[in-house]
Length: 132
Ligand SMILES: [Zn+2]
Image 1: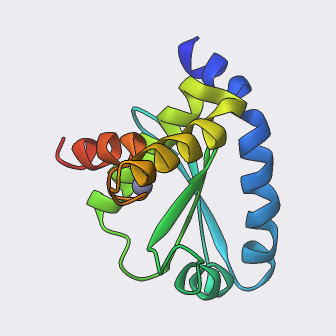
Image 2: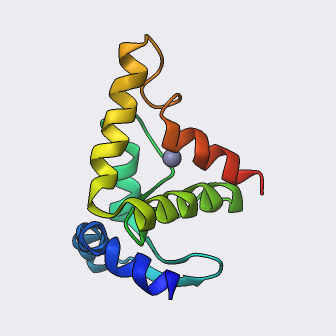
């Protein structure tokens, strides 16, 4: 029940994720359903590789948009997956407010002269989740 509610609550973000997944899947990509503690759709392909390596915040291995995780074909370790699944759970908790809360946390870190990514509270929480 909690999961179903989380899926509905994060749906606006998941729709953005699915829109992004379309060109990935259209260009020799593939999707994989993850069913563990947290449900997610893992999407990989050459288009995702190209976009992730040119991301404006710096090259990254994966990113979560609602219940969709877009990842590189290479280098997706279980650690990275744990990290992204933590972001999926954050999206379940915060719903449509998540991107705003995330940006606010980055801004808050920046104002205090800290790194907007590294000291973002959602990234700190996701890094902790990697170790479990
Ligand atoms: Zn992260």
